[in-house]
Length: 66
Image 1 (cartoon, rainbow, N blue to C red):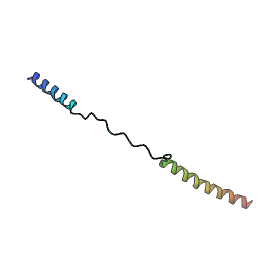
Image 2: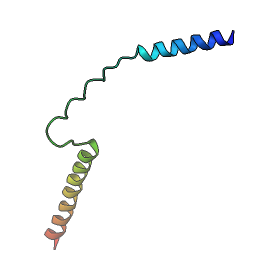
Image 3: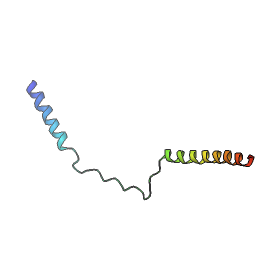
Image 4: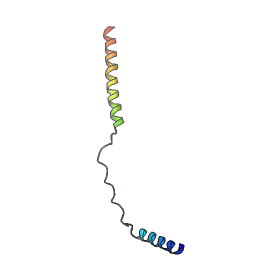
């Protein structure tokens, strides 16, 4: 009985390998032109913009008072 089960398992394994699609998947499309900008870079830009605004306000207010 073990020999029959082994032969059936081997035959089903061979059938599974032969039934696999031999064609490779299509290639991925090229990325769009331009540089990719992630969210962290945008947050860093706005953080620098806001901190620059507050630092300039502080610097200008101390210069006017002097």
